[in-house]
Image 1: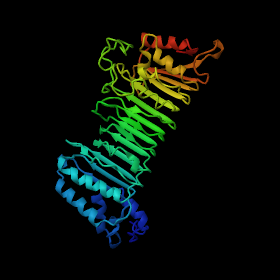
Image 2: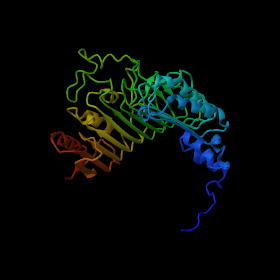
Image 3: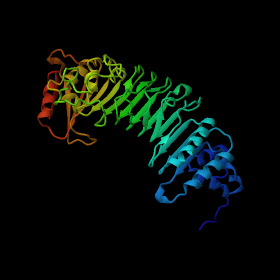
Image 4: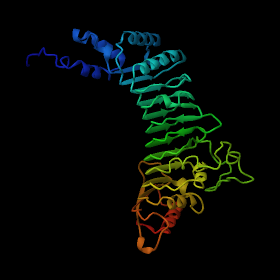
Length: 398
């Protein structure tokens, strides 16, 4: 065996690099490095990141000890700026509320740039109904947090660009930010009677998936590049009188959900108008949801749209009007994908199509050159869609 070298190569690295390395460790482990050598004694006090990780209840962690440890850590830590703060609880209880709120305030005071709050347990984290004010915060990632109105007004966060909300309760009627570029709302809920208005004029990418409650109202997003909207069975905007492909709408015998629409925007688009400037759209919905069908009557032209993915929702009306409408209003569309009666990602059948311009003029985009139909089986429903597309000079080969 070669002789053991006594050279401490890691300890020879600059302090700034060691501070950065320690930021990837849970706070408990970072503090424990103080026993490695005299050089490491105080390095943990100036890490560029802080990871506070609470273990699951069955792992027998003493919650009081964790709270006490973190409180002492924050007192002893140098007042250096923080790039990242990550607070994760595998088992969060009511007694943890005031402590976590204090730790969040500490992070903001130390100019944190990326803040992550991930909570799991019998209760949500209830953040105070106070504005979040930070000139440095760029990324905010929230999981299982209850968010109130003042907090969701990000006027005091002029650098905020990336906002993720997962399994959160949105107890507010508005989310607003002039600086936001990327917004993801995943499996969040809103129990308010009114729609949550989303005002983010600088948004580049948007993800709305699995919303519980009423569909949010999207204000104009002129810079939007990509949007993914999936309205599942938890959406409350469903037609109670729905018959395959047909909504009762504004009729005398309309269901209580369809009409009257008590949101002050009954004459405007809810979703499609706000995302009509996007270049890439993925629009999915359960059959009984009426928002997309309703919006098509009010939506402007999708003047920038290059790629479009739709599911069977758009193809179930007897005359396939929703599909025809969105195709006729997408003048520069280049790629169309229909994902029909198949969730994916693997599909039993995938068909490719092509546009036959020699067969006469078409009412859809002349730029369309990529067509895809993905399904599990070619049945009468699929054949109906293929026949419909043929009327637009789109041909498929089997």
